[in-house]
Amino acid sequence: MHHDKFDHLLACAIHSGGLLQEQIAQILHFRLLGNERGFLLLQNLPIGDIPPTPRCREDMRKDDDSSERLLLQATALLGEPIGYVQESGGSIVNNFFAQQAQARAATADSFDTELDLHTENAFHAVLPDYLALLCLRQDPAAEAVTYIASVEPILDRLSHEERAFFLSEPYNFLSDYGPREKNQRIDIGRHQSVLYGDPDAPFLRFDPQFMLASSDRAQRLLGKLRGIAWDVAEPIRLARGDLLIIDNRRTAHARSPFSARFDGSDRWMQRAFAICNLRGYAERLGQQTRIFERVTER
Ligand SMILES: [Fe+2]
Image (cartoon, rainbow, N blue to C red; front, side, top):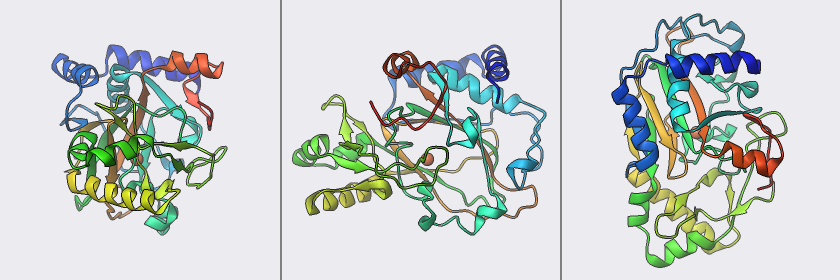
C-alpha cells in the first residue's frame, strides 16, 4: 500500500476505529501494566461487512474498511504499526486465509511455524513488541485453536540453574526471511539467549523449529522448555470480531491445523505488528520507515 494511502487509513483508524472507551482503556492497561497471561482478548468487536473469504490474494476485494480501522486503532495504542517486506509485500495489515495453491504444502515440514510455539520473528533485529490478530471469520468447523504460552508460568517450572542457563546460553536463531520472501531457513549468525532483559522479570524469545543448540545439554534443555511451554499454553478459539493482542516479548504462540473448503466460508484473519521504539530503530539504522527489510544487525 502506498504510504500516503496508509497514513490516511491510519488517521481514520485513530479517529474512528470503533473501539469503545472501555476497550481503549483495556488495551492501554495491558500495554502499560501487562498481565500474567501475556495476552488480551477483546470479543465481538464491530468489524463491518465481511465479503466471502477469497481463495487467493488476487481475488481479495474488501470495500468496508471497518476491520482495518479497528485493527490499526488497537495497534496504534500498543505502539507504532509496522510491516516487513517479506509479509504480504510490506503491507501493514496482513490478511490470512487458506489458499488452495498452498494447502498441500501446509504441513509442519513446510516451515509452517504457526504449528509449533514460537515468538514472532525471534531472529529479527526489529522484533515486534505486540501482535494484534483480528478474526474476520472463524473456520466453518471451528477447529482452529490459537495457543499462547506466557513466560511467567514457564519460569515457575524452571529451576534456578535452568533460568540462569537460558539467560546466558546463546542459541543460533535461523531466519525465516530471505531478502524478499519468507518460509526460508537461513543462518544469519544471530546467536542469542532465550531469556533476556531483567533477570528478575525476563523477556522470552523462543522458536524451537528455528533454533540451533551448540551442545547436547542446550538441545536437551530446549526440548524441556518446549514441553513446559506446551504444558502451560492456553488455548483460544477466535470467532468473528475477536481481537487477540499478544505480548511478543513475554509469550510464544502457535496455531492448530484446521481445514478449508474454498467456498467463501473459510477462516480469515487480519494481523498487524506494533513496535514500541520506532525512533530508536531510526537512530540505529539511519532510516525512518514503517516497513522493514531483513535487518540482521542490532
Ligand atoms: Fe506466529
